[in-house]
Structure formats: structure tokens, C-alpha cells
Picture 1 (cartoon, rainbow, N blue to C red):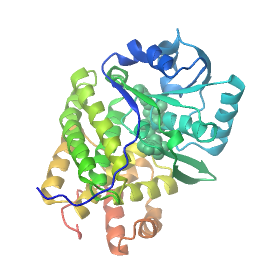
Picture 2 (picture 1 turned 180 degrees about the vertical axis):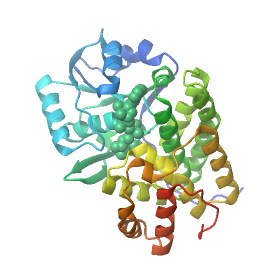
Picture 3 (picture 1 turned 135 degrees about the vertical axis):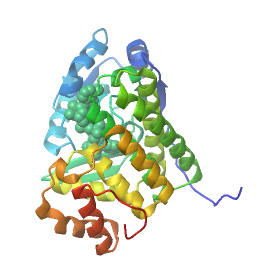
Picture 4 (picture 1 turned 90 degrees about the horizontal axis):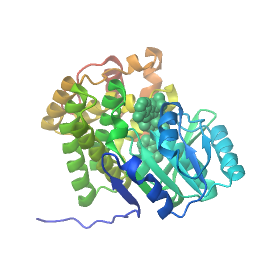
Length: 338
Ligand code: NAD
């Protein structure tokens, strides 16, 4: 086997993975980090779970104001709460928006994060933060926002609603696929991405059939972990650039936008075999297909194509074709011209 030379950063982080781990190991992991005053970050959907998990733990307060893409105003309030509570640890329990809120506090305070994810977004394994001000999302990389510890517990995902399960699982699959042509693509992250994709593609039909299937939930969460690692190590490519632009400009839901756009990018960049396999999965799990169903107006199509050209340096004809197909839900066919 011939290997091209490569460079890769390994991020230091402790991961505890297993069904029941949040209930059985959260206290010990907080102790391991030496914490006495935990500020819990949990949005509406995970508040009850967070209260249950932390009932016997040294909680100094709760941040409940969790919003998608972390508005700077919400970040500011959470930062003030951390100071007034005298917190020495941020415990995020929830999806990518919850992890993102904890990251916004860690960015300025340097407080460590213990992340307990309940979706497949993957933010918990990256040193990437995101903040939104006046409708503009800024992202950056800072080692302080990388959670020190992650507890992956598939039991916490048993109640994830079917539509979000599929969309978030495909968001993870997008990390695996997009990392293949990302700027720092390398053989180690490619191996992680392949195994992640295998696990996601095996698990998603199981959890689509039965959201309470713990074995299926375990496979999908494991796949999401590997997907996040490959994304953290290799970076992201064309797919993420397109989703970033569309999500920001038209306030589209994160995971669903990734799910809709992925086959169109794969049709442009990938092989016919990979596209056929992905489309079969989409049929099997009832994946979302059209940006118009997510609230993107038809009148925005021309502008969206121009924004994609600016962000991703693809030819206008390609961007225009891709965005129109993704908007209408047309099934893509392989090849740059679709
Ligand atoms: P999210 O956190 O906004 O959650 C989506 C919805 O699911 C919300 O309504 C939430 O309340 C609900 N939810 C979460 N967990 C649930 C559960 N177990 N049961 C029921 N409902 C639940 O969305 P997401 O897709 O997890 O994350 C998206 C955000 O994360 C975006 O802002 C994205 O930019 C960010 N992100 C950042 C990185 C990074 O590296 N910085 C990586 C991936 C995603």
C-alpha cells in the first residue's frame, strides 16, 4: 500500500461510551475533573433529563436559554451566569446547539466542558465554536472549547423523535462523506469516516423502524462519534460550505439541511455506486428531500446559487443546478452535470 505524506492533529479528550453511562458515570467523571460547582447547560428538550441526571450532583445553576447557532446575546447571558454562579465546570446535556452554548462560555472563561450529547451532531468532539450576531454566523477554532470529557449514552437518544433521528443521523453521515474531500483529508480520518459511515448506514434503518432499538441506537451514536472525529481531523468540504451558506441566509434547520443537500453534493463529487447506495438508504429511512419543505422560498434560488459560488468556488451553472434540484427534491443522478 502506498501512502501519501500527511499531517494530522490529535485532540486530547476522554470519551466514555456505553448504554447507561450517563446515569452510572456522570458523577465520577465530574469528580475526575475536580469540579465542585457545575453549571448545567440544557435547552427545553433536555431540561428534565438534565435535572434527573444531576439530582445528586454539585449543581451551581442551569442555563436554559439554548438557541440554534448561539446568538451573541444568549452567549453573553450564559457567560454572566457562569461568573455569578462561581462555576468551575460546564456540563452540556443536549444537541449541537446546547454544546455550542457551553462552547461560547468556555471560549471566554476557559472553563472545561463535560459534554453529554443527545443528537448525532458531533460538535462535542471538535474545537470549533460558532456565534451569530445580527444574522451573521462566525465560526472559529480554539482548543479551550473542545470538551475535556464526552459521555456517549445511547439510552439518552431513545426518545429522539423519528424525523430528527433521520436528519441528525444523515448530518453525521455528511461529516463522513464530506471529510473525504476536505482540506486536511488524510488516511487516518478516512478510515474513521469509512467505519463511521458503515455504522451509520447499518444503524439508521434499525432506528427508523424502531426508535427504541437500543442496538440500533448504539450503532448510530458510535457512527456519529467517528463521523465527528473525521470532521474534526480532516475538516469539511463543499457540502458544509453549501449548508453553512443556506442555513445562515434562510434560517434553515441544521440537520435537515445537511440531509437534503448531501445526495446532490455526492452526485457532483462522488461515484455513481456511492450515490446509488445513499439513495437506497434515503428511500429506506424516509429522508427529507427538498429545501422547499424546510421553508426556503423559491424566490431565493438565484441569490442562493450566487452565495454558493462565493463560498465554495464552484461554477455558477453547477451551483444553480444543485440548489434548484435540492430545493425541488429532484432525485440526483451521478456526474458533475447531474
Ligand atoms: P439542536 O441542538 O438545535 O437540536 C435540534 C432539536 O432537537 C432541538 O429542538 C432540540 O431541542 C431537540 N433535541 C435535542 N436532543 C433531543 C432529544 N434527545 N430528544 C428530543 N429532542 C431533542 O440541533 P443539532 O442538529 O443537534 O445541532 C445543530 C447545531 O450544532 C448547529 O447550530 C450547528 O452549527 C452546530 N454544530 C456545531 C459543530 C461544531 O463542531 N462546532 C458540529 C456540528 C453541529
